[in-house]
Length: 261
Ligand SMILES: NC(=O)c1ccc[n+]([C@@H]2O[C@H](COP(=O)([O-])OP(=O)(O)OC[C@H]3O[C@@H](n4cnc5c(N)ncnc54)[C@H](OP(=O)(O)O)[C@@H]3O)[C@@H](O)[C@H]2O)c1
Image (cartoon, rainbow, N blue to C red; front, side, top):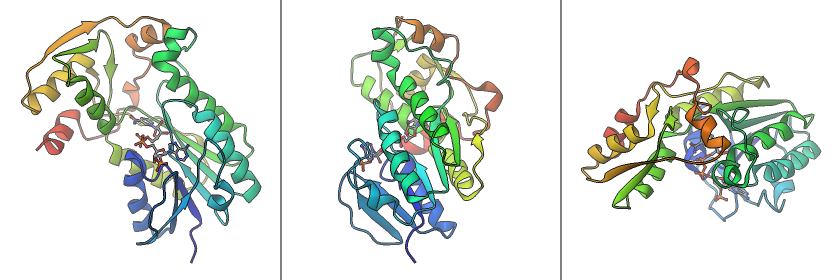
């Protein structure tokens, strides 16, 4: 049986958590990647690039559902447009997309905003490409994944003094919980924009950094810095949070305990 579900971003943090779940649900999965991978264990890899459109015709051939998790800091709308074009031509019946909480509340206007928060503008633009595609669609917005926050904080903690933007708060959610929800959505009917998925608690940035430093037995000075621009102001007012959608269960502390053990 050839796959009827295409997973973009299947080699990434979230995608790697999704495809075993889809397999457990009995789905044959095709994964799109820019690099070559050996197919096997029920996963078929197709080489292609969403930015150039190379390989997309082959990637969507025979596919009824696309779960679109490929993303980078910039240009998600262009990648999504190429995917939508190929998916429409192939008669795809459901396009599932992962976006970010706060995309519509974080104004990206100045050059400073774009440099620091351009990601949000490109996720919002990609959402619009999907909603206007004519394809049946589902979009889930999630807060930052624990895994992504850890990678960012580990990078920052290489410095002797860790800068923590003052007033910034996060509500990190576990990647596995996002994967569970996306699989549920991709096995269901197209549902449009569904309720946000956010982690169980809101933390100040400095608190997240300090918890990481404690858990990893490091000593660093945490220095509050004020980030400039309108997008940063929106962040300080909590535009990236969804306290009324704190449905995630695994906390940052629990994640660190298990990951850094
Ligand atoms: N990280 C977060 O905290 C967070 C929160 C909410 C939503 N999201 C969204 O969730 C999605 C997945 O995030 P992640 O953290 O799992 O990302 P990630 O680990 O950085 O992985 C990115 C994935 O995108 C694929 N990709 C990038 N450019 C591509 C291109 N031109 N053509 C084809 N594939 C391409 C990569 O595949 P190859 O390298 O194999 O080509 C990789 O599998 C993204 O859309 C992101 O915006 C993330």
